[in-house]
Amino acid sequence: MRILITGVCGFVGSTLARALVDSGAGHSLVGFDNFIRPGSESNRDALKRLGVKLFHGDLRAASDLETLPAVDWVIDAAANPSVLAGVDGKTSSRQLIEHNLGGTVNMLEFCKTHRAGFILLSTSRVYSIPPLATLPVEAHHYAFRLSPSAPLPPGVSPAGVTEDFSTTAPVSLYGATKLTSESLALEYGETFNLPVFVNRCGVLAGAGQFGRPDQGIFAYWLNSWLRQRPLKYIGFGGHGHQVRDCLHPRDLVPALEKQFAAAKLPAADRLANFAGGANSAMSLRQLSDWCAAHLGPHTVTSDATPRPFDIPWMVLDSAKAARLWQWRPTTPTTVILDEIAAHARAHPAWLDLSAPL
Image 1: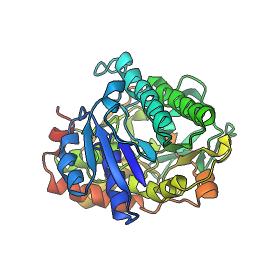
Image 2 (image 1 turned 90 degrees about the vertical axis):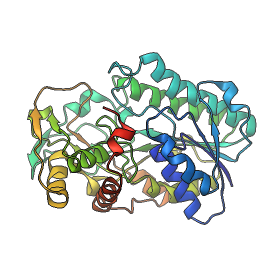
Image 3 (image 1 turned 30 degrees about the vertical axis):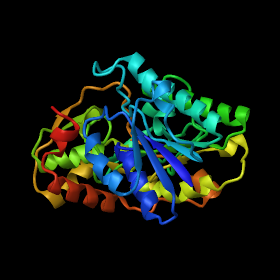
């Protein structure tokens, strides 16, 4: 199988490339990256040694795709993945749309030309913010959980948020670019008879993730804790009770392999959540307790001021992926944290490399 991974030198793209090589399936891998993300250059040589053929280009420029070889499948892992993108003063709203939506359109045109399948790695951030922000939650063992006695909106249960949950605006500019990309990908698939799948991922984490508080929170927290950098609980009373689930990107590979081989499916079965789920969920306070036990003491300060787009509890329910692809996450959160900690110890300058202060 000839596979092109966009954003191949980012954390998710490079992790998937390594896992696909390690699978022994004999895939021929091509990678595409603009190396705009700090730290992405650090993955270039390792991927080349694995036999991944790398191309330097920008997905926003259609002409940069003209020299790419024909492939059977594209895994689109390229994006500005921050929910604050376009509003934080570090990137403009136009840049965000050009990267996340314009780049997707160019890749879909590439797939149309070469009759290639397309897998979009999307995000839990396509789900509507107001009903998520007002979920009935209570603190339990230093983490929010859904209040057992309160009614819940459609599409959410203690197992997590399902694909039926509202995607009505607002979802953030970032979420809107991904939601629109999903819709366009599925339309291209139907219109041009291309195999297309949309995999909505929860929080992705693992060794080598570029640590930033708005993107790689697990890697950022562990690296900052180990280096005694300032850390702060923001919003929700400043207690760190907000909860996220956690998934290692390599756990996606078994589902990707099945998607590569799948026959044409109904449109409703082309989109599914992929996440660590309730068993992987952890609050920032619980993450701090893990860090204290494994990395030593550190002081975390508090700022109760609310921040745009923050939500108290975000766990995805992947029951649909289990039904369609017999998929389940296999890397426990504790293993992911151990892996990040080992990488942090081995790379003392990682925060400066991947997220210059």
